[in-house]
Structure formats: structure tokens, C-alpha cells
Amino acid sequence: MRRKIIAGNWKMNKTPSETVTLINELKPLVATEDADVVFCVPAISLTTAIEAAKGSNINIGAENMYFEENGAFTGEIAPNMLTDIGVKYVIIGHSERREYFAETDETVNKKVLKAFEHGITPIVCCGESLAQREQGVTIDFIRTQIKIAFVNVTAEQAKTAVIAYEPIWAIGTGKVATTEQAQEVCAAIRVCISEIYDEATAAAIRIQYGGSVSAASAAELFSQPDIDGGLVGGASLKPDFGKIVNYK
Ligand code: PEP
Image (cartoon, rainbow, N blue to C red; front, top):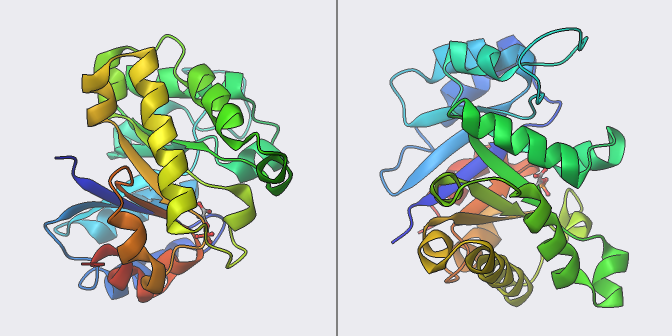
């Protein structure tokens, strides 16, 4: 049985001091023994968030990371800067980073490899645009994203990875994918992982759904056989996130 993982993506929201307030507010609401809970927060708030989350079940993750060890990469965050302060997870290849910061399947792969090298669990994002869904190329497109993201990743590493299926048309739009659409793609991702590796790896890897998840939609989505939790944007900044985490 795979353990559920429910992660919040705060995006570019909340100052460090607001982070403390929000974590203190959400701490009792997201308490659960049934799932891993991750708050992915802006880089500047990571240390503060780790301090504020101490003694709770909240794990802190980053929203991005660079694929080099150190050097002349102004403005970037190195993997050992994250591990040094105790960051355990990092979102890689969110569609907003692909759209606004020119991330590609190849840079996603480099970052995934680097995260594993440093013992950070990557939450690897994939997802189609509305045009791709309407053209009927969703599964092919996502299979390509996954195959490139996992180049040179070992089966042992892949077993510990998290994949977030996030249809771009559902992110921040209030337009959640139907349960059938979400399950279909998450199942296809698992098949893709079994083809790259084997059944054991496919059975172990955790696949989240993301895209306008709310307290109302979480229970049905997270009960699907291939959906192991969610990556949640807007609703992760509100008390509703407690209801999403405790969706049962
Ligand atoms: C996201 O940013 O990963 C996301 C899923 O956002 P939202 O829940 O707001 O659609």
C-alpha cells in the first residue's frame, strides 16, 4: 500500500513572517497519521518554515532548485543549501516554471538527478495544456515528459519519487479535472514507469493529482486506485487545506 502524500505549493505567496502565522494556523488542522504532509514554500521562507513546523507532522519542501553544485549562477539555489537547512522535498518542473522560466524536459531531468544525488525527494510535475487535451495527445505528451524526466534515474531512486500530474488547464482556474480524467492519466503514468523500470517500481512510486483541488473534490480524487494524494496550490494557503489533508 502506498502512503498518501499531500503537498501544498505556496507559489510566490506569503512573506517569512506571514509564513509563521499561516503554519501556526494550519498546524493543528493538517495533523494526521494517514498521509505525508508537505508545505512547499518560497526559498526565502524555508528556514523560517522549518523552524515554525518543528514538532509537527509538516515537512517543508522547496519550489525549485538548480542542477549545479555551486558557482556563478546568480539568483539560484543549490541542492546542498536545501539539505543544509533540512529541506526534504523539492517541486521540479512545475508548469509555471516551464512557461515563465523556460524550464524544459531536459533541465527537469538534470534537476531530478541532482535532487536524488543529494537525498531530496523530487515532486516531478507533468501535465498537458488545454489544446493538447483537445487534440487527444494528452497521454503521449505526458509519457514523453516522464520518460525524459527519468533518464538515468535508477529504479531504487524512482521508487521514492513523487510525480504530480497537473493538467495546465486545471491549475488556478477552479476547473478541476474529472475523477475519470485524473485517474486515467495517473494510471497511464504508472504504466509508463512500469515500462521504463518494472512492476515493483510502478507499484511503489507515488503519483499525485494537482489542479484546483478543493475540500469538496479531494475525497473522490484521492480514493482513485492510481492517485496517491495531491499537489495543492490556492487551497493550501487556507484552512481548507486541513480538510484536504484529512479528506477521509
Ligand atoms: C499548483 O500550483 O500546483 C496547483 C495545483 O494550483 P491550484 O491548486 O491553485 O490549481
